[in-house]
Length: 297
Image 1 (cartoon, helix red, strand yellow):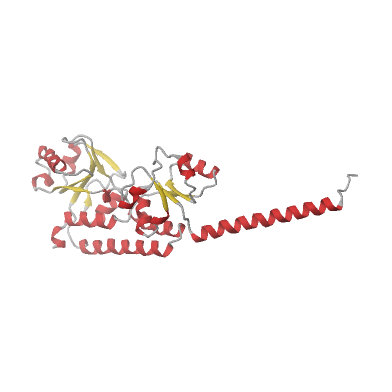
Image 2 (image 1 turned 30 degrees about the vertical axis):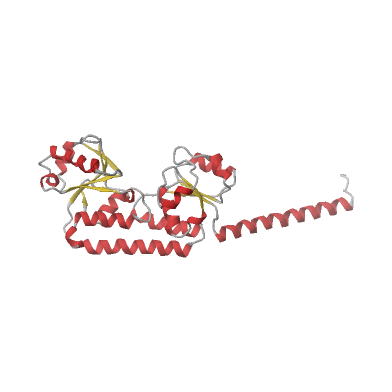
């Protein structure tokens, strides 16, 4: 028969077990309270979510940003901790975040944060509707649910107003381009029939001339441009100055394309077109004003 421990030892073990249980409950309660209060030290390495946080009034909770975050101007004062391909995990952990917003595809970063017991929000973006859905979800996660909902509702109203304004207008066949080799018509990278750029164009009252190609981007040859015969060509640029405007002269090589023949080739500059964040309604209205200037006089 096994020896029975002395009564004082049993009592000590019971006391220790009770203390441990109370401690674990206290830790769990503290963590639950922290989550309920919202994250206070947030790292966002995604330009879109960084803009969302500042737009919903949670910019003071952001302690670090990604390599490519540029808006709003306040982000310039924050440390940068890498982005999709080069996240600096050591620096992230040194900032003691209670939430890291990362790309859903960053599986290695997610594993490292899990090992360090750091909560994260995995960002996945697909179409226009995902923008306001993300704003609402992120607002709830960081404890500013009301502000996040108000921001998302305002964007939804703005988009609905643009849809209503362009609803009865003719929808010109539009080629939306976000990249090509400078000064040439080589390597034309256009918006296909899925993704937020396609959704923005359709919301603005345009008909994507390659909507049937269910990809986010399509490499266009000049032969394909000729066969699709767009009524309007819109290029997106992130540069400034006359160089961007003079680059449109390359389209003169295709005079039979209706957009070229009728002088409907446009260059729109601004990061709001490629950052699926709270400025999306501004970007959609710029598309709409380009496609239907008569509706905005």
